[in-house]
Image (cartoon, rainbow, N blue to C red; front, side):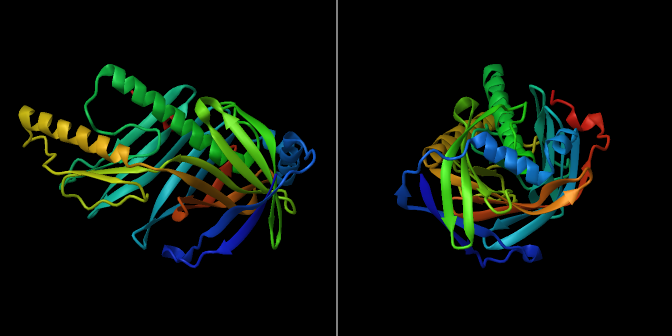
Length: 341
């Protein structure tokens, strides 16, 4: 099918003066086309534009340092982040997820094969509460659970981390990551005033589905789009941490200092948390997520990679990754990929 694609520059300024480009796909004009190009031929052209199969296959590891800027309540919050790939099946990303005064909470996510990497690092001196963030498909962090619930949560987090790896690698390598096999089919053509884009439909395990838009002129990935439940944010205590995301907020009051919590109080807090989580979960909508890949630059090894990755949820810009330092095929400390015990 053919979808008309409208590209509209977004004027919302964020810290460090970055802007989000908004791609609005309008299905007002739908035409059935004849046999389009094979998806694998389109992706082969993309890989050629990225440097060619030989150079891409020679990439065994990627280490990134940069800045992550989030849009929160009309303001922007920028912090450092780092991300490492060791192909075919190791990935880790460390970022600041909340700031409380002079203290920060960092979250390290990823996987090593089928082993989960999921660590929330809270400074021991932090006071005034904590922030718990639940993204689509994950479970609450920091709540007591049965071994069965923990195992289910870990599997959900592992799947979510592999999906994140797949979405990033599609813009970098335009091929199926071995850690998360995908199927591709040609989905049609999108038109805009300044050009056309191929659409490649993507499917994977556990209902994974997305659409990859590829610039027909540059043959580089433009955008990945998919549908999922909106993020759910849960805030406990009196902290003032902030987290990007437009989903429902669940708040439970009460001290979280271990020196003040009795067993009766802890049980009451747990019950309150579970109830509020159910209420917030019931209000979650299914919305569109988008990742934009841009500012491709040639890095070591002669391959092109995006140095700017932007995200939108339900039409709202939520974050931008600025990949400032990209190191290819340099040794990565194995401790970065240690599985969470």
